[in-house]
Amino acid sequence: MPKGDRRADRSAQDAVLTQQMTAILADSGKKMAAGAYQTLIEMTGFDLRTFSNSIEKLISYTGDSKEITAADVETLPRTLHPVSGCGIAGSASSAGKGEMVR
Image (tube, rainbow, N blue to C red; front, top):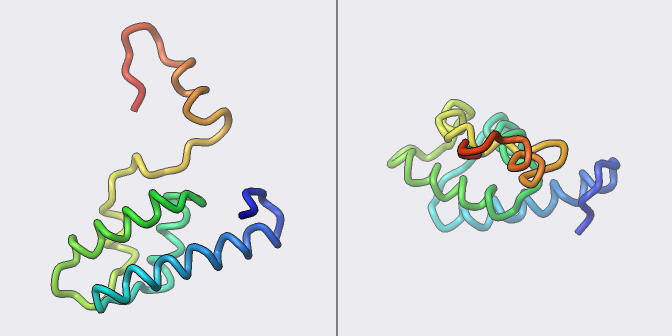
């Protein structure tokens, strides 16, 4: 699976995420608004596990509602934002002694 930032890579990533979202939502009978999908991708980046787990949480959070909205997605913890730059290793090395990386 392409992990780059070229248009072709993003298109392939979007296809995988859309397929995963459709499969998870099919079991619940829910739909996800286009704005909710975009917001979720902005929060998780192309991390299939985080993306899938977030959809599962949203299914539970929305209860009887048949649609997951962008407002629902925004209730997810902000720790879902993808780590930029050096990733987790960079975050850990930049933390001071005794500080916990969040």
